[in-house]
Length: 474
Image (cartoon, rainbow, N blue to C red; front, side, top):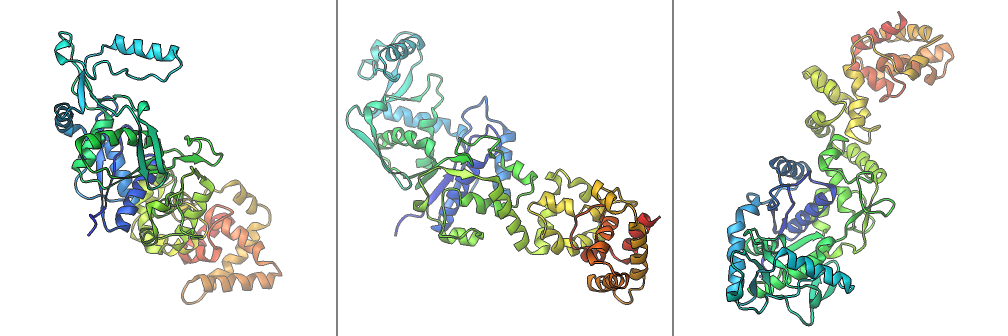
């Protein structure tokens, strides 16, 4: 039986969960679920100056909002510093690492000499084979790994294929600083080994790190995990992703009204695909996803495609589920305050009744909330410019006639019964239905666009509908 797959997501808590990190987390999560394994979470908080509790909380919140739940408690890398030092010292004892007493001035001279000779700056190994008895008094050493000096290191990558690195380019890098703090390169290896990580799925900007980390794995005689370095995300213009392209925190996408399901769907298809399938459920993605199918080339982020996909997810969502999601998201939406402040059980029922018409026109939850604003508007309505134009001139006469027709509706007040009354009025007046519906919509919503006008009448109800029409006649 092969060992179960264990992946990990390991963000640094120096900011929000950005969109590239969210995709990395998603790929780790999908692969672990696809294989029946698990995903762990490690917070790489060794940079104490830049790491914050607020950033950690934002990352956890972003993952939970996306539905990417991890197994067990999050692991703090900083809390494991003693274990990192223990392994570094063990490597010295094994003869695979050594104490280096080179001063900052000496290291600066090495860099300047390499630069003058047109070489990349490399540590020259001067303490690699020296007797520690020669150590200068009062100097706290670093610990450096003994990297192989000849041949090459091959990273066998599930996405990039076999990638070869000349060992002369790896140099004897530091694994423990002079203050006893482990370097990222070393801490990651120890943590991944101790956490039982079988597959390391991360951005391809870490590919060079993988070669150096393999040196530590080999020195400790530890199994090397399966590496999968996924391409970075670029903007639609092919340039490196920036804020203008969409390099924002996940919380910004929530505030822009994107659904977690749509963002997951879109991120999954940035660098991976399954035939011609565009719209994918979570079950679809879990069933189809394999890390070996990820493309090597950089993916391009396109806001228009995300928005269109979000609209599809909104339209396909059950009305009650969509309402619940909208209400949970209202505090994050720029236009959600007015709705949340007026939402009693009657208004909630109205909003649910309006959902079929609202979601047909909305690409985001912001647009959905904006489209629902008419339900919560206080009388007399404030008209937008186009609505005011529609209600100018002879519109009052049209509204007066429509009002009389609607007052004559007998029995249950529904979209169908209201439509029948309005159509009959238009026919009798020799008017096109649109010539009646446009000023009616403006009077009912204060806008020139809304869900279907007959749906609006049904949702508002007889009393409120007739009152809003009367306001504009008067």
